[in-house]
Image (cartoon, rainbow, N blue to C red; front, side, top):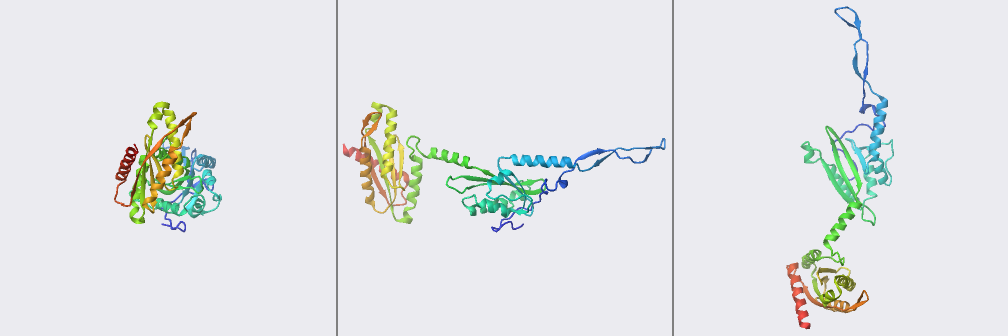
Length: 356
């Protein structure tokens, strides 16, 4: 094992041939047919005859062609590639890796892995996280000790406001060659696609609000924190009165626009840390965390009711709906999220029927 850079990374004991462009002779030899005259006596005639022999000699033209081909293939890859030898020396890298790094290693010099790591630190959001993951990837694993070809893949966040990602994989050559190949790939597109899928799975497609699943997850987390913080959690269950009549009279398209308008009004009335979720149909739930006073949820309920009661203009129509709101405040961390929402739902129905 060798010390590769200050974070005390360990690399597998590896060896890698000299860069083919620098000294290609040791890496490849072309077999050529040559005829070499030797004196061999033919017993019957006693005369000498030439004997064809197969000799091996390097073909420098073939070597140069092979090196050029390999360099072309390496530089054509759509991801960055770095190769380390047994001492942790950076022996080969391609154009894509050079384009990813702020200051790529210079050709013709001798560089160890610390040069590569230093440049990667400049593009990742958390250099320490990258160091820890790379160290784990380069350490010999049980699979490697058993003769299997190890492969360690991980992903780290890129520096910047865009929230990109860098995918990294480390692989051993195998077949007695213990060199390490480290590949770097910009995985920002994949990360954004995953985030979009996760968002669609946890949010209502019509209003963009968190859906029931995300609400219950956040409520469970909020309840678990109650014992440590000594505050309260408020749940406000909202049902729209008159929404069914709007749907029946004006159609579902108008009803959908009304729901979008109501969702926007609810979001404007809550704090930044509160959650407004569409629970289903014309039902919404507001989760208020870290309530210092139990009575703090009542003024919010009144503001929400007033906001929903304001007329809504859609397709040259003026629509009116009202909100029945059930309010429940909980300080007991042992209460389940499902039980708390049920209580808020029951309180909403009590308010709705009491208003009649």
